[in-house]
Image (cartoon, rainbow, N blue to C red; front, top):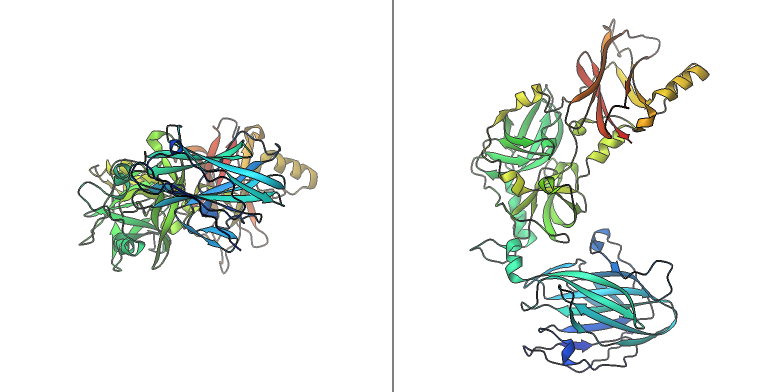
Length: 553
């Protein structure tokens, strides 16, 4: 049963309540001096014990980092086990459940910060203290000590911290002490009204944050981008969105490895694409020229950035018609400043890539990117395809400010990008191709000497010390074919800039009714820089199989 002991009420400089203390266990000290107070924050401190609070099962809810003191895992008790925070929560029996877990809080949208901590210590009596630190590291105030008796080694506490506009913005921190020993701390970010305005509004626009129901209406400005083969058959689909009249933003992967591109609008209208207004294969974005008619363009943020821990809005996609709206957390950044990417969690579907990353007001902050290299959308390899799958992470975004500077670039015909090799060729069906793979050449040679037949020992990762990689392809007599012509088999090895680094063939492969026929291409990797390389197997000049390998130092 939850027992509550309420302490005295103090008042800060603005006259609002400053601290109250609630405890499930025995409370011994309620005095809180005025010197410990700052601003007009109202703080509650609650301890649940002796039963521990179970860890959250929601992986996305643990985006806020736990920064513990310099106490190794094997150090003597007590110690901090975990920490989390959120804007609200409630007591459920002997448990406290956060309604939402995050560590970035906006004023005035958020009213409070609840910090929950779980500790480990020897059974017995423990005194828990909390010290609140300002962004400059100075102590803002100190919570009352709470004394509890636990007959098990785990116990828990939570504090509620009321937010107000007079608080200094930045990274605050709650330092915890158990029995006078610093056991760790938990950081949380407070965004003040002037700072929050860059996230939730632009000059002259109301700061009211729209609901997800409001933002769901923006889906009418989103499009499907279909990759087509030469016969008009669909090879894959990505997302895109209208950024201005007759201009659509999407990922470069949405137009790669295709013979043609077709845009499908929210009303079902189909529009072929022949011009690319601007693109970056390396950064994975493209601007397509297409007639948008009366569709509204999404408002964009052309400057600024997003903070780690910030909650953003995305449209996940399940074609042919379903779009789902929801939230993701920015969990990190990667790449140099000029090629910065924002990493978010959870990841999305491949079909969502090319869509917008929205702030909470519905403005485009970034473009969803899969990070795949040229040809990654057309990988069909077996084990080697693992590298291709690894390329398409589906959990990063490109700052839209980078893309917006290219709105007035000179357009390029889509056909010219294909002819120049900027766009990889699609993988085409071949009745004669059976399968392919990559292996260490020395393994294949050793196997031939030992047993007379090579062992299919596929791998996708090679060290430069392996010296040579063998690419094999198996060819068969096509079903129902009377007298098929020989195959001109060739192989290309390309880097992530679509440059050919090695090539072999064509070699004449005469098909047999009795058994499949193997063709082999061997190339040296000692002269290749560490990185990821694409391998295309061609029949009569057309790619029929594709995989990726990684060369390691």
